[in-house]
Length: 271
Image (cartoon, rainbow, N blue to C red; front, side, top):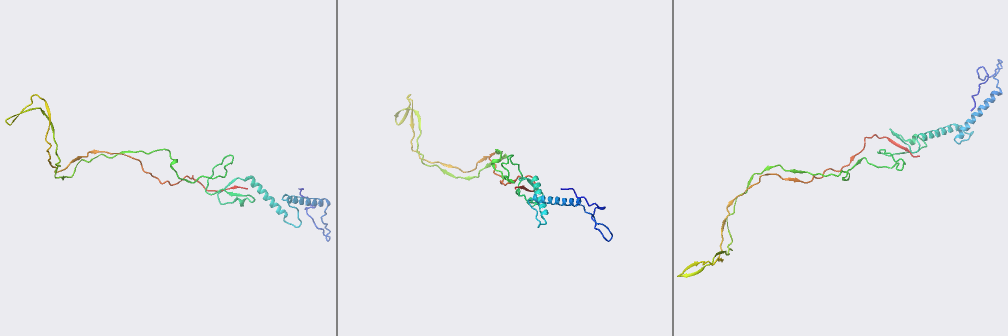
């Protein structure tokens, strides 16, 4: 761009009209100044042409807003370049209020990360980027408990129940059966029997012993009186040992594992 054009060579650096009535002469325009003016005009036109060329436009004499359009396009491109330098594709930005970077940064594309999620760092090679998982609450099962058991033992308290008496009842008199025919065998010395006038003389004569049976004609019965009576039973002080297992408890309800958090809006640049 050329240097700024020097003013005309007058006392005040301005052009003046001549006045024949007073004899005042008008400002003399020299070729030097006119050439400088021409050069400045051409230089300015070249500058404008280069601005249009920057956005692929050519000068059009029928248009009066080409320069403005070109400047806006250059500004937009410059802004886009600046945004891409600060926010390349894949970058994540956070907002503490409802903002949409698709509107804030025209010409770029942003995708919302998702709702109700926390951030966990991916693998360094990026193989698991954007994968999801986890839950705000969990429900424990037996498989997650340490191996354990419950045992218990106990004794009842000692208590002396004393001596108890059964109720009295008269069972009356009972008779045994008459089927009682039987005999008995007993041992006696062997004897010689001599009959002297109807008298039996017994003399073992040293002959040893012998077995003799009684008669079997013995059918008879007995009357047994039971009578009213009671029994006394001593219980005495004693205890009992107790063992077993506890009953199941718990409902298996899920519980929260969410950390203390603050919610923000998160976007990542996708294009």
